[in-house]
Image (tube, rainbow, N blue to C red; front, side, top):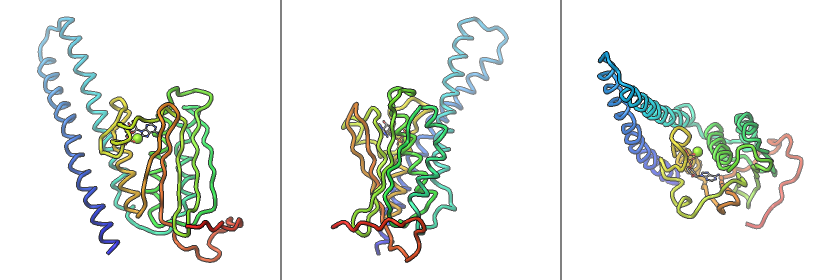
Length: 258
Ligand code: ADP
Ligand code: MG
């Protein structure tokens, strides 16, 4: 029953997502199409006043922005909707963190950001490694984009893992970026909510993260203080460890009182 509920929940959020995606793509695309036919009509003429040229250039810029927006949305969706990523199995969270960190390494350098990892031994979790990887990449990219100055000396991101009780694995992604107001926090998981300029933000990242984490039976939460920073907290479902499964887990797991 739990699986069925989870599946139903997932279908609902995917249905909602699909509907809003269709809408979000349709708007800029209609606009792009209309602009292109306008440009076509105007370019059919043979005299171009400076005013007309200036206007056509402006239309061109707006058309490019519209197309960039559609492309960004489709790219986000592609990473969300890959069919080969449905398999649920035991996932090594630390390996996923490593590969997510590798993926964003260049970006980190560009932002001059330090990525610190504080990883306690944790059990494997149930889920899909590449989807969990997408969640982490999304959170890391958001963290970088939250730095008020791209190349400041103290741009820091910290990824923490810890075990809570026998079955819960907590992953935190913390940044010392600009933080969020309460109004923003309330909307961040809504599809297409973004505070970023066209072409930078689609507003899909966190709604996708939310859907993925839910599909793994987990939860995603946020704490944020404007001007201080933001922490995203993932609570995932740990699974019992088989003896000898952790090769480098020589540190005994500390049993916490649940
Ligand atoms: P996008 O990054 O495309 O804007 P997301 O769904 O990933 O879409 O994020 C939605 C919004 O949440 C962002 O536009 C931003 O305002 C806010 N946000 C997300 N992560 C952070 C963060 N680490 N620090 C500050 N604001 C954030
Ligand atoms: Mg994002």
